[in-house]
Amino acid sequence: MILITGSILARPDTLDALREAGIEHSRRSRAEPGCLAHNIHVDCENPLRLVFVERWKDRDAVAAHFKVKASVDFVVSARKLAAASPEIEILDTQPAKIG
Image (tube, rainbow, N blue to C red):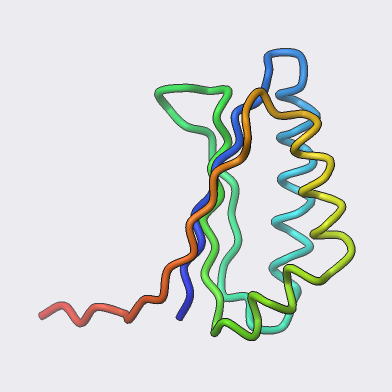
């Protein structure tokens, strides 16, 4: 499984637009093949920071996601609305067995 975390720092005047774009991006992404979860959250310590947490079946699904025109358009738009460069981490993971 692939885990992606990312964050975007909005400017006060762009927060609403960036949040709405992020919600739309997450909803659309959840319908893509191989997407197990795609969510946007607000950082409790800095409400201008939007945090994305995504889980994907495999690297092929992630590669396909990054090629979707709407995903590319979201990144271009988000960069224009952001106060700083977005941050992203892509991690290969294994589910933990508890108990």
